[in-house]
Length: 282
Image (cartoon, rainbow, N blue to C red; front, side, top):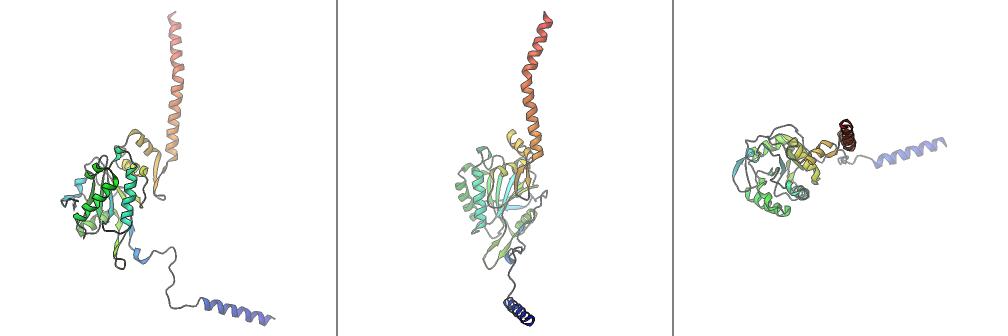
């Protein structure tokens, strides 16, 4: 019996080993590994870094201008690195951004409190293509006045590399797919060209955009309510969105309670003062 058990065990081991024998093919990729096509692609956030505002780009009218011409020292700028002939991700990004902007108040129309630069990272693309893309998205945005503040830019290869490197935006050509492999994000830039915040993805929350823009100007472009909301929220990089700042919210709540108490007690104080004055006058 003991010998029979040993033979049975050995047979099972042989069968198991045969089922997992090396067949000369590469091992399948595990979930934690990135596809080879995406190696070297992504975004390295460079918060606090500066972009070179002296770099020259071409606007959607074909005019050569400096990047600094879109910065007035007072209003923030959103930069969206895309390429205009992209068959997928860039369109999803621009569509998502446009949908979020449409949900924002008219006071937050592109060009009023901030500017938006859709920058092509494909140096082969032309201002004509940029103009067509702009026409499409201004129509989609349904606010024609935004054309003065939403610019679609192209540039030569050295300029593209300088801008994308300063943003930490990494991309590469996928020869098999015949398209660029890249990530997606809207980058918030302060009025002086400092990188303030990254909003990654293709879907955007209008409130996050407003908070990021207001944050980039230290509360100078938002209303009192916007600034109060900014005070109560902080950006969570793990969730890629603004979340409630509990401590600040508690401080605001405490201040409101004190104010309510003061307003509630004020009539009693006034009546008490009047009563004393009347008594003293007799």
